[in-house]
Image (cartoon, rainbow, N blue to C red; front, side, top):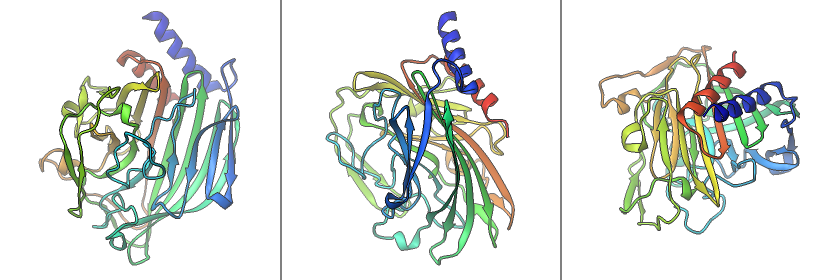
Length: 346
């Protein structure tokens, strides 16, 4: 156990210093014609920041381990045998919300009813910083209401970190209310989301019907559970969707086995976030999301938040996405969480 903890600590130290033997070159390459920026680690693609016209918000697609194993669902960008094809708005990794002044930014996939939903439009790349162990990307985007009004501006620094057996994405997100008051109405649909590969889902033996906030049903047939071994674990010791959904925790992991590789995906919440610790909107069918704003739905009405920004007011949120090759215990995850707090101090 001591050896395992030391290994985790050493990896964290490497991420922080960027100069030790395991540090890898991180390079962000802008491709304006394709409307994306590709993130490479030692010339191997890690992920891409994509603002394609086909998507109603910028996404990170796909997410991969240090060895190149894809851990996010490919649909709807690509179709992979055995994957679910529900919820087309769940695209790899993203940030948005389901109720901004009554407008839904979460469920927008460009289909029927999209004219009544919000859209997040990439506006500019402000800076790219490449280096050993990490690369950084500064971007700005606008949250646009159905009538074309800009309701929020999102200014974000995305930090891509690389070390042996680890890939990390830190997202420091600042939202600024524009010319009107902004109310984040309590909704389970939010906010930092990942839709994972089939193997990381919890096994399911029942056909399901999913319904979005517009009442549109999606039928999902029973799927083959071979190799499907996903397990959620929270910082509070809660295991599985049944025990952890809608609960508060400072971190959550999802462990499983993808293409002969043990994988752990983690999302870390930061104590400087105004609503720390976050609630969790994590589903057995593969949606893994941290949602600070959805108190009413998560507490069955016992708590109502309706988090509000006055015109010109800002809120900054900080999250880490961890992609780890190999298994992790709760103790090891807690050590990695501690490194997150050292890395992100602003």
